Length: 206
Image: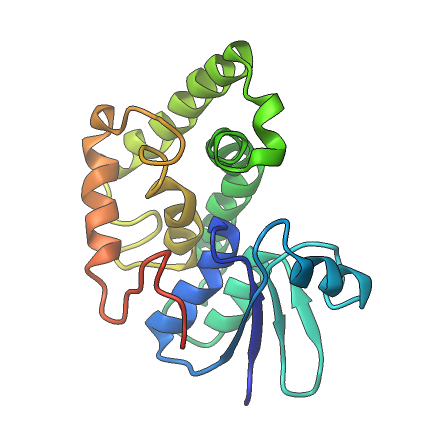
């Protein structure tokens, strides 16, 4: 199967499938569409992005699959990264819903309004302070869980870990969150980075 991944190099959501593909040892064609570029505008204009956002995974039959966490589940189907047991799978999905509904909406947003020039007007002191407080609360949920668990679900890494790793590992450097508060998260981040096949956010396919 020949896969094509349209992704934004600077985006944590786009990083998720790139990391998953690397950990699975899957070959694929990568099309980089960075934020606020002509290439991204053209992709929107031509309907390349079905839901108007990145990433998008295109299968060999031309089927386009959007949404980062949906792509993770598709890629992981039939592997140890996605449990077969209904309860374990539900727990994995629960963390993935948490990532999109509570985690990304503060962790990624605080980083984004400081990183992208077109969003700079949103980075008011009040908004940054609000996101900082909310983000530390969200990270504490992860900290409390990881204090007693090596991985988010079960005794091995799953797609839930990949989903939450993407924006958590840059929460300090890009979002300005105080990661020294969260030793269990830092231990977990190191474990993910030590997985065979791991690639960093800035390691793009040739």
